[in-house]
Image (cartoon, rainbow, N blue to C red; front, side, top):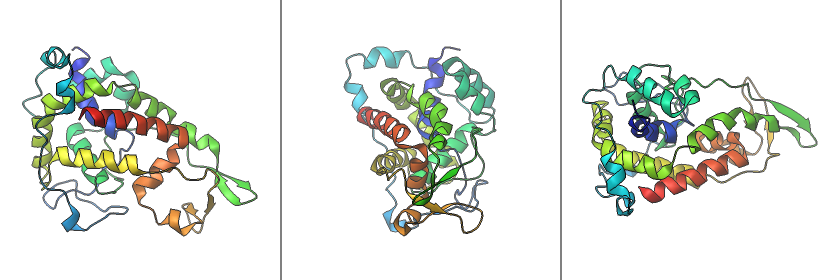
Length: 260
């Protein structure tokens, strides 16, 4: 299979691969579990809309590249092995992470949750092994070990290696397939709306001081500063990437957004 056959899926994996925990779904879905934290104001949920014309369609080479995009699968079930085989041609590390089943369903689920600041923790769509989070002692007390940031280097490098323009072109053609998957899970919003909302949320996260102090009242570490500790889980995850990885990811998302 040509590597391009995976690019449409990569727009799911690429954007969401840096956050891979999957949890709360609709009441009719098997992915219905607890969430770590959530913004639950139903009145703030976006309307079900799908942008029909993407900015990338104005590019001079759009028609030529769009003609090379393969048709999306007719069925969601049984597509996992096909996706993994295609992913291996695009990125061996990426393909190695796609071990769980129900890949497409789990990725649209993850994006739906991220759009509402929820950090999924179950039904993981990928397996990305990393070292545990560590702290070091300083004059301010316990602070982040700078080595923690290196845990995410491989993931962020793999994600941002995907060409945003090409991903947008493939997304255009595969959008109906993704919407169908999303609707199958019983969600009232559109996948397109949730994808754009998720990107906006990730771009709004601002860096924090690298020497922000931690405490460990029980098992998990917490920020000493209540403002940081009470931040949404999505922001906290972005901070754990480290300033360099966070900027690299946001720059990539900003370019992708410009084509969408």
